[in-house]
Amino acid sequence: TQRFVDPLSGVGRIVNSYENARASGERIVGLVSRPVEVRDREDSVVRETVEGHVEYDDVTFSYRSDRPVVRNLSFAADAGDTIAFVGPTGAGKSTAAKLLLRLYEVDSGTIRVDGVDVRALALDSLRSNVGYVSQDVFLFDGSVAENVRYGSFDATDEEVEAAARLAEAHAFVENLPEGYETRVGERGVKLSGGQRQRIAIARAMLQNPAILVLDEATSSVDTETELLIQRGLARLTADRTTLVIAHRLSTVKDADLILVVDDGEVVERGTHDELLDHGGLYATLWNVQAGAEATEEFIAEVVARA
Ligand code: ATP
Image 1 (tube, rainbow, N blue to C red):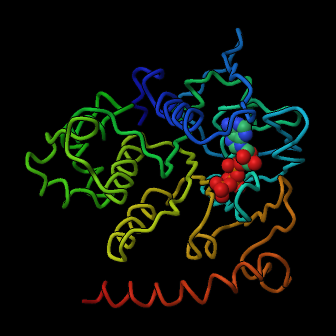
Image 2: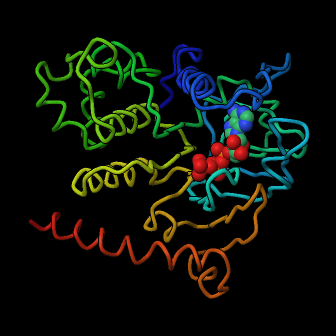
């Protein structure tokens, strides 16, 4: 079902706040990004819902004219597929995925959703059908319920709670002083990173988009929380086309297609098994990470069984 009432208050704004926060904080003077001038065309195409086909066709993008951050990127996802971007930090993975939301416009090439150029799609159609979950969750000064409901304002209390349950957030929310009415954010209860992530998952659950852009968290949480987040994410991404900036081996292993990005370019592509066989950059990354994560996974399993 489509619940977006006011597209301007939806994921677009969450994303913009995130962008602003990032732009004001992290970016070094001189690396000023181009002003975002994304607006609807006069004859923009409205799509209440989409199937979830996503296609990047020779996409190139640069924040500054002299250095493309995404170069000649092409891939196609069928509805429900998971496409994982992996590669070194700064390679352009997040940027590549954000282009789908039209946070920036491509310099050349085309991105299509269900065969429609995203530049021709009405922005609110695009952003109500493409969810965005990142580690920098935007929580505003309001109750937990309001934060989960953000972007799906006609959702009932029951729907909010159901989404929170699916996101594995219900248990900790119930333990807050005033449950779902507990105030969070600026002047409220300070939530941990893992709790914020689950609020973000619940919010996306309510939005119920056919397509999801997921920037997996890198910050560490305890193993039990990690397990809950993984479970929430598994439910969220099931049956949705997902572009994931992947940091977890479990995510990558099960992806329909893995794109190994280095310096803006796809240097290897395939499934986990294909890439391991290939013995290139992916195989190297995998072997370095596998040792560390095998231990973590083992601990998680023990915790889960306890
Ligand atoms: P990570 O894994 O660390 O998140 P990434 O592969 O997702 O990295 P991006 O975040 O897409 O990489 O960044 C690619 C390059 O673009 C980096 O050099 C980064 O500094 C630069 N960049 C990212 N966002 C902006 C921006 N808003 N303005 C200017 N440059 C940017």
